[in-house]
Length: 216
Image 1 (tube, rainbow, N blue to C red):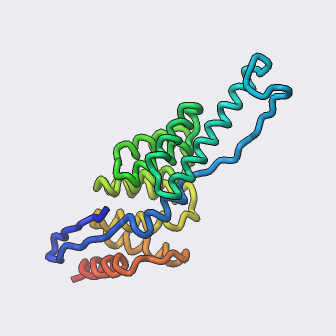
Image 2 (spheres, rainbow, N blue to C red):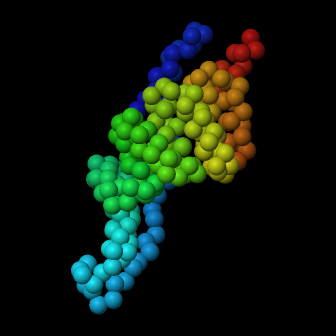
Image 3 (cartoon, helix red, strand yellow):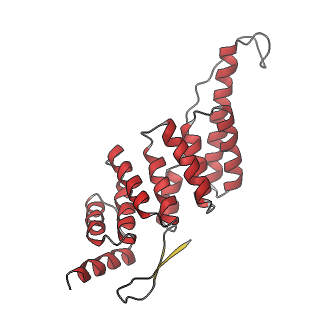
């Protein structure tokens, strides 16, 4: 996906690819594996009459985790339709599994299905308001829909929850730039650099150029 920007101050149209390389790398980091709490049912090879309701429920929750983790693996190899299917199964088995909603939202985002992505990511946030990755992913969905104020808000929330989420400073800088707030963009670029993030050269040059134009 290439975002084409036409500046009103007479600059030529500029094209950035906002998915490669940095969106893809972050997207995969934003899918989540979950460790499984194994429950043993003594003397039962399958769920039967000897399994209590609590044990059956725990096995169902464990199976949800298995589907989530397999979906995560599918995401790693670009098999997003299969990933979405497994995340859906995980959600059906455990509707409160916030990482599965986050992960399915990330897969939808990769497929360019931004409304579905925002829906899933918003649900992940409802379940776990401290899930920084969900805010970050939803911010990118808003970027792709040209909803810059919402994107900036989501990236800001990512930083509030996890100040060490260094990429979020860069992502917010992109949001600020697209919204025409060049000085704020430069501040976030500087902060990201101070934290060790490598800013793409073309974006850095555009921010510098736009900021200097404000003083002319």
